[in-house]
Length: 576
Ligand SMILES: Cc1cc2nc3c(=O)[nH]c(=O)nc-3n(C[C@H](O)[C@H](O)[C@H](O)COP(=O)(O)OP(=O)(O)OC[C@H]3O[C@@H](n4cnc5c(N)ncnc54)[C@H](O)[C@@H]3O)c2cc1C
Image (cartoon, rainbow, N blue to C red; front, side, top):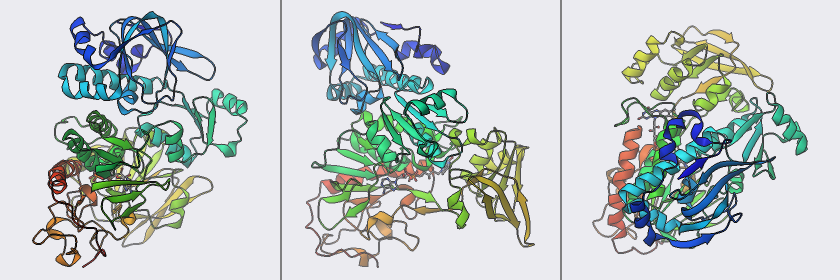
């Protein structure tokens, strides 16, 4: 049983108001009896602190008698979020991941709890269908509740005119991390905090981490470290599988790999979800007839991978592949290395940066490479430009048309038919505030600190028009993320990874490949290294294609793991 406090009651807010019972269910006598063998009983005493924000590897406490208060520790005061009584249980998504806790947990009244550690909790989630679903649903809803009510211990102090503020907003949002955003131009509280922490405007954006550490314009890696977003990494353990990239392909590989018993580590440069995570609505992914946002899809996949025990590290780029020996190794930014018998390369693609010098200057302050709610807020009511004729540009135009006054959609070609799905073309035609401008490109960006004007040039006439536009969304061609592979695997002329039948025989070092063995369909020119999704030459550049490839390649990973290890290479042959 669980009591809601009058303040900070997550259950009464937003879309969660109707889901209290699922968020804070009371376990039945039968369910409690089933849990007994997974935990140990211990007494609790009123006032005892069970956990502080930032503590890692916490168990789940199931209340048998007495009560536990869950408390948000603010800068000025404590707020009781919820009180768990007999039959209630603590925990949210961080409990399952073994990463830092967000709340203080204090015993409200004397009693007894069943303490269930992370491994046993994962066993329950994987093996007991009823309790697994009950816990996962409660954990997800609790996390959503924390996000909706900004009930964390993280404050982002920034400015809507700053590129780094946008980067940090994107990073925290896409990592499903609850935070409170205070804008220095709009919130009196922001100015009060600025004075209290003696922060200069040039220090912004600032992340106040647990009310004490003020990180001035931190990198994503610094924020991840401060907030304990990642489990402590065990660099010495040789994994069965390292997956590089947590887009749809990498997350699918993690789910299938971990669910089939492999020891899986996922490295992700930014945030889980990849390109799909920046999509406002994916409508062609099987099973979601009304569409699903990329963020929601990525969030679900992340939970699924963690449920099966995959370890996921965000803000943790693979810097360099070391393929001169086996097991293979990957350098991390800290200088540490992680090692694995097999690797799945799922680094996807990045948008090609526009080849205009000024484009880099306005990145995040008028030029954006993704159109989600975070960016849309910045241009509410304004005219915007979307550049590109593919599905991602089409989606962005339709999405932004909902909040912007006019969306100018600029394409270099004569129309959209050759590059965009017909459902999106129809939607664009039916949206009165989208203006399609064919044969048109941007030839200049202007502004002082932020973008203020763009010049459009139409071919073949060469006619130009300068518009007072402050927001441009660039969704033009993409380049594969293969720069870090240090020549280890064979690539095509556009730097996409060759796999299976596409790998030329000359790229296969006979010292590494036993007689007659050719790469499996998703295997690269190096045995045990696979490539899936958008980064793979010949893949269908779609969410479903990426998920299919990530899932299917695991069967080939098993096959290779079952083979006798080949000797380390004398030299590595790369290109044909
Ligand atoms: C805005 C937008 C809308 C879209 N809408 C649709 C749609 O509606 N339907 C559809 O089917 N498709 C859509 N797509 C395409 C779809 O999202 C992609 O095909 C799909 O995401 C590819 O998945 P992936 O996992 O192969 O690569 P990505 O999604 O590109 O993910 C790769 C991940 O790897 C990470 N990474 C790269 N290098 C490294 C490294 N060295 N170390 C660690 N991590 C690394 C990246 O940060 C990224 O998170 C859309 C794309 C965009 C951009």
